Length: 283
Image (cartoon, rainbow, N blue to C red; front, top):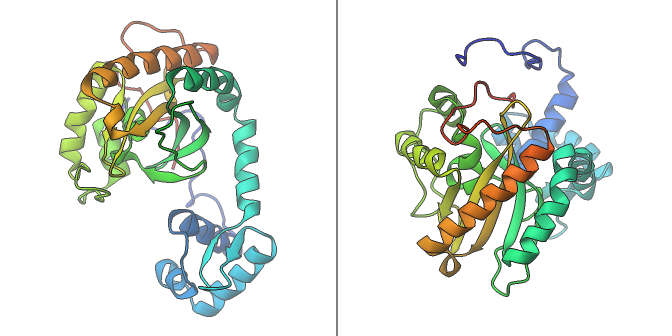
C-alpha cells in the first residue's frame, strides 16, 4: 500500500481537530523538556517561539501540578514526577508490556545483560520497560528515555519493515544527527543498513548512540504482522563480538517471536524480508 493512501482507523491530525491554545502550548513545553531536560526559560521561549511571559505562566502551572520541576540552583527546568507517573500508567496499561514482562524478566536473568522493551513515537524510540541481567558489566538506559531511531538497534528494528518513502518522511531530508563518530549520518546509508536488518531479522547499534555501548534488537509483531515494538539487549562493547551478536540475535528472535505469537501474530515464513503494508503509528 502506498504511504499516501488513507489507512483504517487513522487518528485525526492536528489540522483537523480544534486545539485549546494554552493546553497545546503546555504540551509543547512537556515535549521539549522530554527531549531537552535542563532547558532555561529563555531556551524554551526561543525554541517554541513564545514570549517569555507566556512561557513563564505555563511553567508556573506545570510546576504547580508536578509535571515540571525547576532546579533551585540553575533555575532550569526538567520533567517532574507527575509526568513520570502518567507515563508509567500508560506503560502498565499497555497490553504489550503486560505480556512481555515475564518473558523478558526470565530472558534478562538468563543472558546476563540489560533487556529493554521499546516502542516508536514518530522519529524516536521510547524505552518503556527494562530488565537487568545478573552480569557485572551492564549498560542501563533510563525507562522513559527517548532516542533517535537511526542510531539505536530498537529504532532500526522498528524502521526496517517500513516503506523507504515512509522512512525518508520520518527522518527528513537533512543529514542525521551524529551521536558518536560511528552514527550513520545519511539516510541512503541507513536504508542499506536496514536491508541487512531485514535479512538477519535483528538490528545492531555498534556504539552509534553512545561510545562503549552496543545493542542488538528484534521487532515485535501484532496479529496483523505489523511492527508494534522491539526488544533490545544493551551491553558494554567488549561483550559483543561478531559471534555473540549472531547468538544474541538468534535468542532475541526467539523471544520476540514468542511475544508476537502471544499477541496474535501467526508467522508466514516471509516476515524477515516482507515490508509492513502500513505504518501502525500515526504522527
